[in-house]
Length: 391
Image 1 (cartoon, one colour):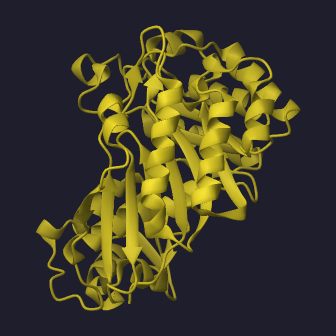
Image 2: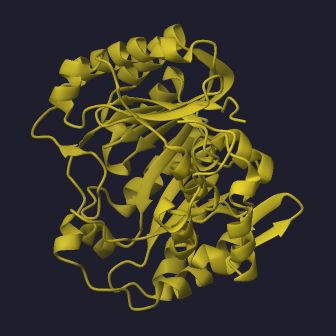
């Protein structure tokens, strides 16, 4: 039976100083300026329009993503949070995260973001190697990341993440390890360590950079013990955290929770335990069109019963500790028996492990996650007889 899921709020701020060649996010480079005040007003209208559908459900986490959210002034972030607090129920201990580009942070800005309500920051460092930063199209220098981390500590925001890439052009194992060591020296609570991928529609996809000098798997295996010695435990395929510092917002995604999405191109997910339905929502991608239509009815897309096992596993199988069978049933509205034969197959093949009612990807399953997940695509399986949910 489908049960009510935890709820998060995602706010999309789509502008960047420059579009990175590897980025396939819904972001737009601005020329000279961007309509900050008008966009904030549109977000406020969007929140007011969507809030009634989530009445009585507390927001556990809030995430400002982009684009480059740190281009927006602390006062603008504060106005958005004030509207959210007026229109929605915000949990007293809500995690409130701001993505920040080290190259856009002015001195003292983190104190302003803290006062506005931000209690967690995600820094897009990516690498500390100057030539790699240039190749990646980043507008910041390694010293900007170091300065941003120092100012975060000074502002009392010790719960911050640093994004790091491996598998970079011409990168060696030693280069990848050095990036991790430099990041650890800055005292973050969380590190996102992910491989550079060439996404369709990006500059890198059309004109690929040189490959790394060492296999990406070898780089990952060399970096893992360095992170472990620093006190960081891997809890998701690309996420490492100190005790108590796991990203609660991302965990809600990975555990197939619900989220309200506002902003240009923002997606949402809403479960209705009474009707047994799950729908996805989306706003217009282009900022000008979004601002004109921000309080119009949402575009909704029901998640068919046949698609729910894949959608759940696409998220939950990223987690090192996996999930409980009861969570699958509560979040999809389907009985465990609808997928238990496939899960047994995956265990037999060494892609999944289980203990009691707990299931997780094996070490091999994490390395070949796409091969594992493709088995849940409806075209390869028949879930039409699954009970307990409706569309």
